Length: 136
Image (cartoon, rainbow, N blue to C red):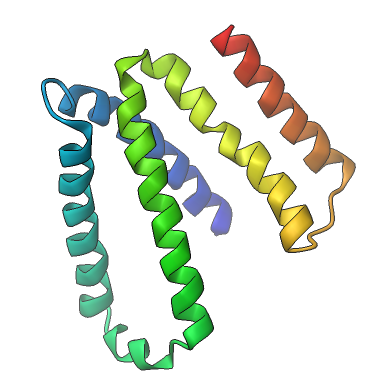
């Protein structure tokens, strides 16, 4: 099931790039990021509330909260920089942004001690090579 969710994530990330390029016309990128964040907050809390998961908030540990907040900061910074980038062509900005996949593979191996097999290394290198082909 996780593969379907991952594919949906990729689809909506692609749609995000296109919609952001259209939505940013004549708008300050920081303001655009703030508007986007409000929509995301309402959507996320709406899902938590209507799915009955709001009661689980009390199960969050300090470590959960710390790393979720740090992840939120990283996400926010990613969005801020991403929304500044679409002054360039989306077909070039999006592949550079997707270098995050190769960086995630490296960081997962270093920080999380996740094992790397040949396929994972080859895939990461191909992502990097494809990105460089697209942007050069």
